[in-house]
Length: 178
Image 1 (cartoon, rainbow, N blue to C red):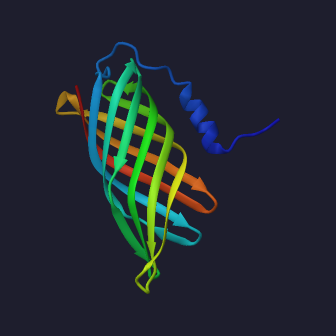
Image 2: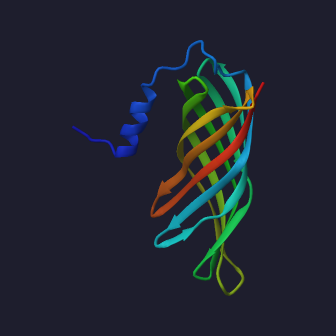
């Protein structure tokens, strides 16, 4: 019998959470979330942590299930004389959410992401660039803030994880629902 890695078991367990029915925190039809992402890029023994702006746009398919598009802009960091710049991150997700307390939601993102990186060595010229495409997942929590249509968000997303390269992000944001 095949055993799954711990993250796959976690995702499977979260997918069994019942989706929210009628409650005080029901999702509206569309949303926009503007925030900041502290991205972590691990390549072998090197670790880069650029901070970049992030925008999410979502469209409700039914109560508790949404389509979400995510865009993160430019950010860069240097480690041991090597500079890595994230040109951008573009992702599309199926978002499943549930209310866990009266004003708090937990959600799961499953989809695909594309990350474009530019690498520059200490000598100056570009050492290379590449696009990393992969299955992407995320988990987040949001809490109502101010009005019933505004929320604060906290999210962990893994964009890429293959061949000793891991690209992930921890994000905070402010979300408006319409």
